[in-house]
Image (cartoon, one colour):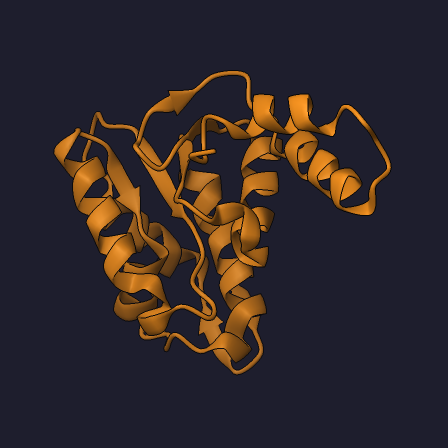
Length: 167
């Protein structure tokens, strides 16, 4: 059992949610993007992306839907609880689909690193598979650029960022 704070999410609940939303024979992707600080926690955009991916024959683990179906209120104070739950969701997935603005979200950045370590495929905000992507390299170069530690940051950031963000 996965127990955190006052909210309890068990692995069987996570597995049941995944099974409910994973159509047999389809890829299962985790939808990752910014929520905090956005009206309605960006749920409408999450549902739009879920519909787009479903239309392309891709099953989706949508954290917005999980928040509603598992009875967990969308509350920013519950960030750590959601992050633990979402790591468990990533374990079941074949890929991660990153929505616009993922790199500005602490939770979505964390999810990208976990997905990379789990060996998942990456999809951009249009649902297109991106080959040879390393979110750790992108984030490291962005940090070095911000701090002014390197001169070649632009080429590296553009190489790693381009599939996900409209420059």
